[in-house]
Image (cartoon, rainbow, N blue to C red; front, side):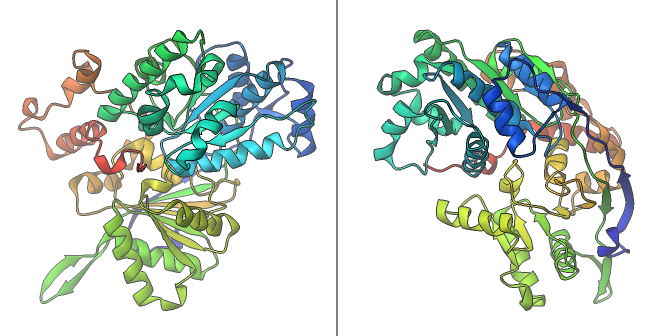
Length: 466
């Protein structure tokens, strides 16, 4: 599929072979009502990592799951919640998402699973309580809901300060799920760590001892990261049993052109827009990830000027959209009416936007986990897919596309030590620039890549507004 790209810019193509799925029977501890309901919709077995994680969670072990995108992590935390509800209908659970759109998507997924089950009594109430929820409805939701889907901002500004108004939620709190946990790194992670400790203290005040479930991209120090974030020991599930399709990963350096006798390099986001247009015209569905809202808008404007007949087939998606606009665009993507989308990293998290064939990343997003999270938007149904990383005019980007083995590394995520009262770790000391003067450009680029993990920008702060 890399033939969709300008061959003058393609430096190399890495082929990732398809992987067969590994399956296992349902754990015996899952209630027959749930097993029978899942079998009705064709889920007769679990992936091996799903079974391992569900067994650990049902055994009340705090668990972090670091498997690939589209590996069925939603099933991992939904099944134990429903199983616990069957045994104790007064139980509550809290699902925290870094983005409101992801929370809405997970609510839909949970409802789909709930509706497959023949409940012997009243089914669980799954509700969203975030910045989009009308204020008049919040108290009712928090005092009647079985599973509350929210965001860290909402937890900080409303749920914890007014905990006496919804004591039922905290008294019966059995599970807390943090989805896309790898986002909580650096200074942001330090703040979230304090927030989680506040949550644990309030739960303890009401006599609850919830089990934590963390879902994350693949990282090198998952157990250490989870312990620092939550403040307790964790069990790791990282043996991915889900199937994947063939995937081609192309590394692209935009070609140059002559103007007034000068050699000028083409802009990565404009090249990405042209590649998306080619993809859509050939019957594929794709997404372009850009670094900022301004670049998204410029790319879309240039694409429509050059290919006006794509208006309506290609849309833009940004974190500043209203709730109604966001859900309308997500519906257009999921239904297939929109053939392409130009987006910020607001669509990096695991929102289900349907079946995509092509992912184009216009500029290195700042971390290896972000690259693979964005790449995971394509080929979610095991079909052949193309991922293209295009370099901006940045030494880091050029280094990555010229040395693509760097993406094979697993990242070490840390929280900002000062916020947790810890001394800097060995990893952070190694990334200090003033101790590495005189090193080669290659080494400096590697150091900057590591340092960028700790430079969490405000524009990536959940994309939630209050």
